[in-house]
Length: 321
Image: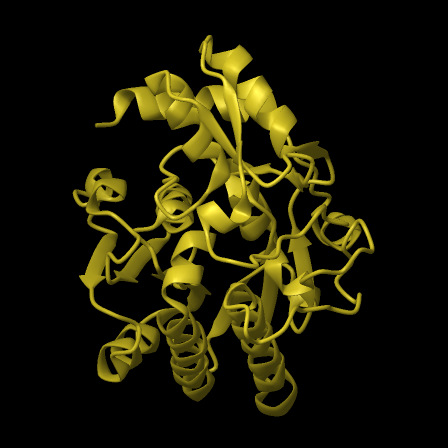
């Protein structure tokens, strides 16, 4: 097949491009490099089945051409990272909603299958754990820009599913839960690479809030396995599917584990949310995925544990400038 990846120079997109090329597909990517990096795809440029376009997905003529010549689209392009979302809410909303609308419109005209990368943020402040795809969602007030990301991705999901129901467009909505691994940057608030970088530099590990909030982390390689497995499942079309891990860990415990695995002597310092982000910032206390739907469709289970994730990410950061 010929596959288009929007946001293909990003952390997840570059790993997906490698896997698709490895199985023999041709891969086109589009990325505006706002959060992606050419370094992520440097090794792919010599492959004759790979091509890249440095442009925004808001460019309709370019998107029309790219979608026209592909067989399938993985739509990963989006504003990412809590810090970026808080600091640039206009960009978050316009990129996530406008870009997805263009992608679905172009795919709809040609009947091209779309895998849309949504997020566990969609669940908002729900306290029902683990999160199931059909659970209610709970958001904070609109004056808190932190919820603009969750709302924009929820609207994207509504739009994607509307294209499926009304236009019979084959769409799969994938809600991703805290994907981590090599090439992820801590620049926009991603907690694992940020804490590992601090540990490697001997700096205090800054844990936001109380440190008791829990998350479940999935290795990027496990995510790619799940995405490729779903690609062959017709019954996944028109569904929302969690992709993540059901193993929770508190952020405070995560910091201590990073210190142990990296051999760092750094202390752990708690930083109030107001200092890290904005006054009145709200966070989710727990976030864990119910992956029974994914498992029923593909037999998927996570293979890479958290300790190995930390080691692989730390090794990558040691080699990186």
